[in-house]
Amino acid sequence: MSNKFKKFEHFFGILPSKGRFQFFLFFVLLSFTFWISTKLSNTYTVDQSFSINWINVPEGIILHSNNKKIKASITASGIDILIYRLINKSLNISLDQGKFDIKVGEVSIENQQFSIQNQFFENTKLNFITPTSLDFDFSILDEKVIAVVPNVQINLRAGYLSDAPIKIIPDSILVRGPKSILDTLGLIKTKYIEVEDVYESLIKTISLQLIPEIQLSESSANIKLSVSRHSEKEFTLGIGLINIPKGIRVKLFPPKAKIRATLPLSVLRTVKASDFNLVVDYNDIEKKDSEKLQLIMIEQPPSIKKLIFDPERVNYLIRK
Image (tube, rainbow, N blue to C red; front, side, top):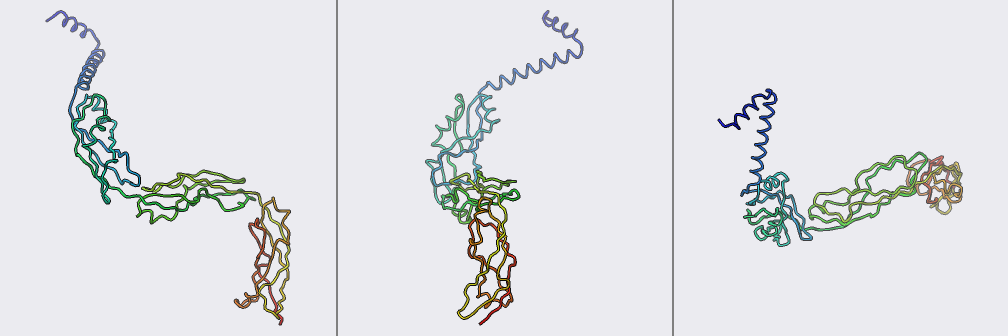
């Protein structure tokens, strides 16, 4: 037995049992690291599957589900092969030279071997690829213009009202996709949002709802809502009569009515009773078997948001 081995045996023997285990574990890990390093630095030839990423898709073409894979025979170091497998590498396949027949297309993989080689690490060699061509499902894009509709809930603070309906910009967009899907689309909505306690004019940008296989000319739209504080004002108005035949006189009971109008504070003082025209229609007597006539407002300021009539109907007496 050599002196070196005897010295090692002596050194190992004087170590405590716990120290012996740790010393043994150290040598095992060191040996494993050396073995792994050797294996990863060696060169291997393997068959490796890669998913496909289509590029250079011609304009006017939309591809359907993509679950295609190709198998490549590559010669590379162990570390490179390990990386390819860990990152699940995909390969770009160009469709600029693809054949498009009705619904199924075909593209040559063999003709793209050079561009595929350039997608690997420098020291990786591409031997061959199978299959030599791939087919794929596609549709020819159609297009049309459809309306954009806000999908929002606006909750106003008490005493506040909108001055006009919500405005959306743009109010329509161009959409492109398979005709079979476009034929079912009449509008596109924004994503749903809810806005609380609104007391001033509002402008918001909202994303549009995405539809599978449909391309949108815009990804979002702006909504605008003009909001102002409102109040009520009461008026007493005389009641007119329309469509009355010649020779007929009608007496109304009562001849006047009160109205309560909801309108913006900004115009509260400027609105007058003369801005309204409150009537009943004689034709309603002929149409309805009723002792009362419905009040109708045929003229009013455009800023009025709500009208309450008191009374809503009036009695009448016909004199010939």
